[in-house]
Image (cartoon, rainbow, N blue to C red; front, side, top):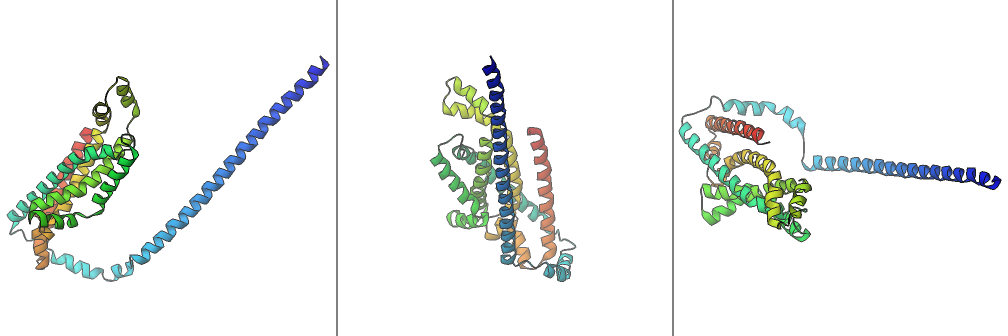
Length: 285
């Protein structure tokens, strides 16, 4: 009995010592991890600072010129007033064409982006398909609408149709990326429940994925529609229809009062579209 009593405290002491050693080891690991995180943040801050300085030099930023020559801009702004609404009916019709270009370009992009986003989502498609589709979407996004408009003008001629196609291709790249991110952020529970019933992959997407992402998809589409109205307004510069034709002609002839009238009509149209789409997004989400 005496040996047992002597061994019992020794075992407890060893157990406590082992726990203390574990605690010390964990604290050292946490300290090392915190040190690595601090080093990472410091190196990241230095890298960002270097990038900002490099971009500053390459961008040739000179805010002093902006401050020094502000009067030149002010004189140009004064030339815009009073606005000349003599041809307001023509500007209004061109604005309607611009909105129509944005509507069809956005609608076509949303329809095509839906299946592409599924193929670009890591939780839906195999890795090699995801890689290929994402690179395709990157290419669509990287090229400006004006460049696409120039390409489609060669194919279909001058006019709004080339503008619709240009908006469609560029917006498909943007919406495809946004749609795929929404798909990757869904809750897996509903899909697993549908899969447990023996449903096919298509049924999982139709009844498990799409109901979760439809509100976000709609919101993204409305945002892009607002942006596409602004983008479509300059496509006329290269002959792709819309208000851009009148805007370019007025700028080219230095008829700034007409430019001001066109810009006012564009601002009013864009504001109305923004108010309507905001109400619709609030209702959907």
